[in-house]
Image 1 (cartoon, helix red, strand yellow):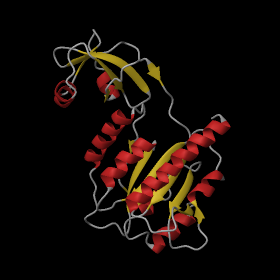
Image 2 (cartoon, one colour):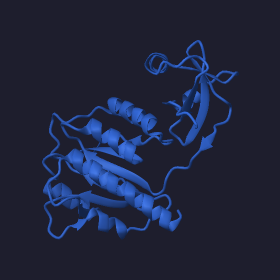
Image 3 (cartoon, one colour):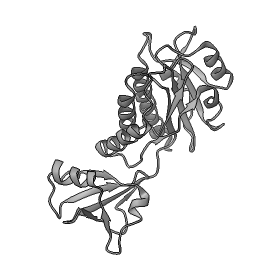
Length: 253
């Protein structure tokens, strides 16, 4: 039986700075986690990922260092198509959205400043980066989701690549297609990103929504009920992840 190895996500630039013996200097918080929280002793194995598809098995050293081999044990390409979540800033729930979206496999997260985002809405990119890092370690992902800079909806609707597939979740339009059947009509393609946009607590501003639709975003429904923004985001990402898993298997992407 193979023992579970605790994981650390170490940035690629730090991994490149290993000394001639392959030793990596750990930060104080990393030492505390390994020695005090996990109670690992020198010589204990530790898995290291760089968030770019590479995995190493290293060994904890006496003086706050990890000994890592020169080449990684595992290399995994990024999944395709990519999954993107564009979510308007909300007052509560963004921390959970970041963590659960990462665990469900989202590849890009775009925070949006919508017309109905409240002044009290959370915007904590440094905290969210830490949450994403911890989620990558916990769920054993090899790829770190990309957290994009804050953008206004007015600018964002035209920012995705022309080859990307775009959906905007809404509730106030008639004869909306549900997300699952809409996804079944999509063809997974290499290099493509499937984007889902989620609005703020008060919903999309009508002009904002109309602009998105003019720019090629397909209006879809996530539920017959009105969902909280955070709930809608996770329900949508779960559907995207399930679609990618089944469709790419069927099409051998």
